[in-house]
Length: 535
Image (cartoon, rainbow, N blue to C red; front, side, top):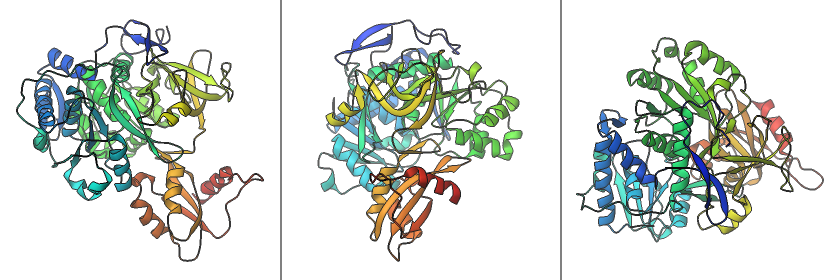
């Protein structure tokens, strides 16, 4: 079976084929947890006194975490939240996030994490579209919440104060002895919104089946055990944070060290102090660590696994880590929200030799390279990557049109252009979709263009990637506008409509029309050349 021969760091569990989501035949792990909440039950049973969460001065064992989750679940039930209801989470990195997440799953409800960098229009859409019944939000974000009339199904808004477990007190109640809800593994556990080429966010339905498989992929391929100590420095609300770190560490009954925000110097200090063994970050974060003067003197001998994704890592960066930390095994990962995180991982023994590859398929994944007619291409030829496996979501929440357009025969049509060699190693060359990758944050240009076009005086707008040595890409906007339109005003306007990382950082203003071909198609290739020249 695929992946069995790879040099993973741990043992791959036994697998067999199963039928799921109607007519999908997928390779699955035997003996997996029944649902996502069982990940926590098993960890609390096997490692009750082991550290589960560390955030500042707060330290929770798995027994503590399970007790807090049970109290939070009781509070949700007390206000009328039940099986199948949606619980929205506008929470930053901290102990309340996993407590609310697992409490939601305990009662059979569906969690809807949202980025704390979202602005009011995006928050309003996600709340209304998901039909969330309760919103738990960081108190400092109250001014971003939409008016009540925009979210008619939202019954409860619960502010969570800054801090550790005590911050979740509004959502804690005395347990009533209620047992965890019985939930089918194909049921939706989490809805994560991901922007599409139309700029309208789609809610990917992450199921219990998919989450458990992804957690087991990380556990087996990275060799995770209860002795591991991981840092979550990426947003917990992102698929990497919620699946690759929270779910995967709970699966391993390992410790998760929480950073509210990434800063290289603070990360290095924390990694040394807490004897961190595992990370999963974007390459920009690793680069910032190398650039920090403290990197040369910080003792990081416990650090054994360094996962990365969202962008390639430069060979020079790989070589520098190998020189400084020979015990650190770097592993590239490729996946998406729609694949519940990884579909490929790089066996660490191949990282340096295959720096242009994102690795090979994880044990239960299947990757096809297809032409525009839906025919598989030979090894080495470039085509669209179609991704399959039990981790691939069944579709988008309340969006059958988008589901039909993006899935075929149980595969998610990724829109990424890549190839696969005879040994199964995958390379990603380009994107069909007009997407910018800013330090691992994926930005669809049409969403930014729509924001720019809503500014008075703007005639045309096109957004492209400007190369950046640290973040990989930054957002550059070409704007055709009348007199009086200035970059400062455009930035301010976009900041009120978009998450901050989507706001253009540089502009080219002109009165001349944007370049188009004879058929009227915008020539973004020409614009990208201009962005490189301006950078």
